[in-house]
Image (cartoon, rainbow, N blue to C red):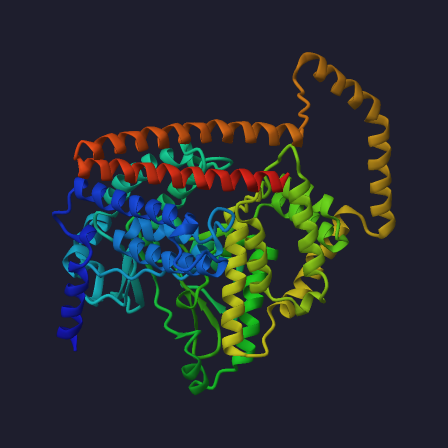
Length: 567
């Protein structure tokens, strides 16, 4: 059995170029740029309606996007740890990518080969200063699991305690350094692109990815996260968090208490152990809501592989490399958003989202306000406890894509985690409703928020009256400031004339059409002269060029007609 596993491991290892010892930087650049250029070519091809057999339809485009999303996911796996992590981070950016990409990237799980025990032993000795045999009484050379950043081995301390030792992948930081340098060049290309760079802060996204990636390579940071998470649940006997053994921990080695359990998605095993699946579904949701709404420190990747159940029915959390944090001032702004949603007040929601950084301020906020009003009208037609997290997040992402919404990573981590937990809960209990569990927590947060801002509706009315009075008193000064800005030229007034735009578009199209006509005439005349002089091949090539120009002229005329109808 062990021989078969080793053979499969070696076969898998050979398929990944980045995992080879003699893998060069030049080859790495070629692999990455080949992926980028292929991706850009696919985008260009998909944007051309004539590339769709038997006519373009929205369903066909969605199908193409889905197949391309699968190809992207597989390509990122081939490119290795850096791109696996970047793909996982991009799965939280529904404001940047179509829903098909986000959905597929959310499935991106580490599927990389393990590295040898000898390499792991060298890293442990280098970081902890002693050989493996001196540090541990036993150490299993076969890893329990392998991921893009490292792998986990079971071991036993000389004191008899069973532990798991997480060892970072050799050469990981070197690979990150090479990949991130190449990614920066790609980011600059996208930032400067006239279409894809418009309204997007790709360099800011790149910096955020770099920060998260380097944090995940520091196992000391992961150990601190585990300790914080463990302290937050110290009063909950139904949640277990592995203890960190700091004496055996370093930036590349993390030693944790061994807490075996049944994977929460192994429903038959849970049944066989006599555990209450309905209770587990409810406790999983309650544990996460406590992290989010009470502690402000939450597990950002609670997929079934990171959540298990002990024989006594307690939840066990694993992997604390990616954690989210909600600061106090952010919670206050979230409360403002909650109040706006409860009132169906799109103006209040827009203002709070701008303060949160989830909505980019623009000259004309009308489209964003209308989108939010649509969401409020659409979501609030059913009671809170009858809502579905998955349906809400899908609608949010669909509206947010290619709009001025810029959901922070924290927000999208929360939405993805809610959707994952809802799916796990329904697997455990088909009648499970995440929103029903969340309702008392949400009511508690809103009640506490109202208590801190005012204890009754009269306080809220008084606050709003004070705001109105302040606005009225400050109105003359604001009018005077606006006039001063106009005089200085700091404020510009833009007037749009639809008729003028139509005329300008038509004149531009006519000028381009004249150029096409001249080209067709020149090509036709040249082809005729060549044909008369028995240059049939050249005449045919020039005639083809004339046909292309004629086709371009035809499309231009159709576009002019469409512009006329539009205005």
